[in-house]
Image 1 (cartoon, rainbow, N blue to C red):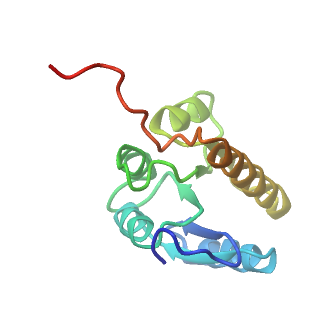
Image 2 (cartoon, rainbow, N blue to C red; image 1 turned 45 degrees about the vertical axis):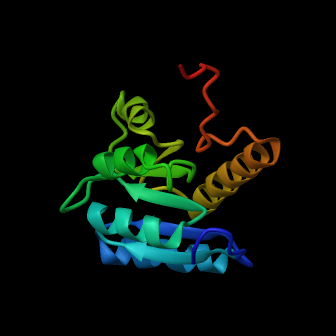
Length: 151
């Protein structure tokens, strides 16, 4: 789906290299009323995000081909995708990981395994926050025009 197309339900892109985990997240999210797309590595995550423009991305950080850290940095540096909220999913609960994920551009950080209801609640919180920013014209993906005069 391209920009400007309205979906009935928010689209979540689940980026996870373990197929069983990806399918479990997808099934629960569909059960919870979301549309779901899937990607199995960081390269695929970038391609699908640019193609589908999902409402939110669940990004595993430990991925083949390109890790979630780099995929997130690339998505957040791209004007077409920087406004899309990204939730970092990781099995690492070490101190500093959440800060590192935020520094890479993630909007939230969830440690796996997590309760499905907690994940859905975090997705809804971020989508509501993103919607409010869009309505107020303060969406992070928009760049204000420079106040400098050209000479």
